[in-house]
Structure formats: C-alpha cells, structure tokens
Image 1 (cartoon, rainbow, N blue to C red):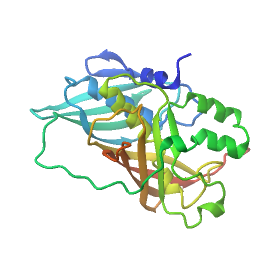
Image 2 (image 1 turned 90 degrees about the vertical axis):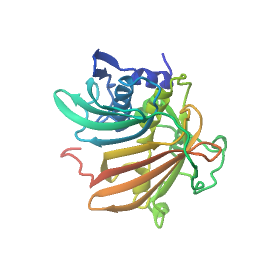
Image 3 (image 1 turned 180 degrees about the vertical axis):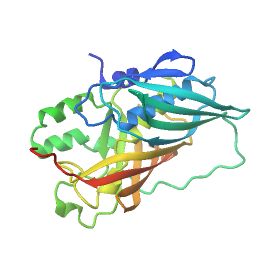
Image 4 (image 1 turned 135 degrees about the vertical axis):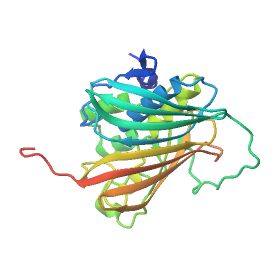
Length: 294
C-alpha cells in the first residue's frame, strides 16, 4: 500500500494520449464532486508537460465550470498559446464525459535577475508547526474517535495540516471572529525532486483550506455545515522556488462575502518568512438544503 504522498504523485502523473492531450485519474471518493485542487493540479501538470521544462510556472488563472464526477477519468486538452523568448503560455481545458468542467491558463517564465526585490513581512508570528496538533488529532481529541468515514479520509490525506489557532466547535466561539485563518501544511511524505510536481502539489493543497476564511465568522469549521460551497475560480502567483514536502505557512483572509459569493486571499510563506506564493479564490455559498427523506 503506497502512502498518501506517493498516491498524490501518482495522481499528478498523467497519461499522455496525444501530443497535446493527457488523461488523469479521478479516484472513486464518497464526495459529491471531484476535489477542485486535484483538477487544478492535474491541469497544471498537462500544461507543464508541453513546455521545455526550464521555465517554471509563475502564474495560473482558472475557472471551475462544472462539478467533476469522482471515479471518472478527466481528459486535459492543451493549447500552445505562445512560446516567446522569456514567457510561455498554455491554455488547458478539462473534459469529463464530453463536458468541459474546468479551464486554466498558465504562464511560465524564464528565470532572470530583477533590478530590485522586496516583500511585505508576514502578518503574524506563527508558532512552530511541531508545537501544534494536526487537524486530525484535534478532531480526535474533540470527538473521542473519528467516525469511520473521517478515519478513512484521514488515512488518505496527502497533507499534514495544523491550524495556528485551535478549531472552533460551537456557534458561540465563532461570534466576532475575524475572517482569517492560518495553517501550517506539508506533504506527509517525500514528493521527489521534480519542481513541476511540487508546484502542482501546492496547487492541489491551495484549494484545501482557503475558503475557511470566508466561513469563520459564520459557523464552526468542523461538524455539519449549514452551507453548501464550491470554488468558482482560482488564481496563483509563484514568486520563489519551494518544496511542498517541507513546512509552509498558509495565511488566509476574506475581505468580503456578499451576494452568495465569498472572496478569499492567501499568502504562502516558508519557515524563514519568505513569501513563496500568492493565491486568490472566490467561492459560491448557498444555504444547505437536505434532500427529501434525508
């Protein structure tokens, strides 16, 4: 049995079925839709496989158009938009059962020295990740034991996630909470040395907790949700090289939620406080309505 990190690498290892066409697996999961980070990560792999490999991705912009079906393969069609002297641009369309479910545009940049460099310092001084409990341990502590379904999901989780602040479990605890969240994350095992794999793995991880910041002032993050939510779009800018199997701090905030949509922004830092990646995502939030008889 491979560990979850190895399964993530396998998930990102697409099958090439034509010059610009790739196929990715979609694991059978007890979820309503395919996890958006999986689709974004696989689409970025497809884009990267059509470049010469010496230009790392510096940005991506994506739209989630339809929910994907777990257990059904996804085909990624790549359009080679531009191959310039410094930049390469690729457009990827993800198709499942004849329907487009996702679009991504990615830009790759030849590394170069700039005339200046700066960054804002991190917003918070977070404790070391080793001093914090994993989210799985926090849930076990609160519930006594994980329900069987959560236990299976925890065993398959490719990332160790540790919230900087303890999880809130009651409605009273979320009152007056700011729309902010921060987590330490890293892959649960080595991911190899291919920079594209690390970039695509981080793209996968970036969709896991970002919309937490939208929900924090409204409801506890764990337990039965009062809202159905889905990612609408996702944008990332990659500033520096990194390894996703080393600890990174994901600082997240939501400047606004209105009209059924919530905007979230994320900044990803290494342990030295260097800004690695910037992320922006909008999510759709609707009151959860149980099906008749449920």
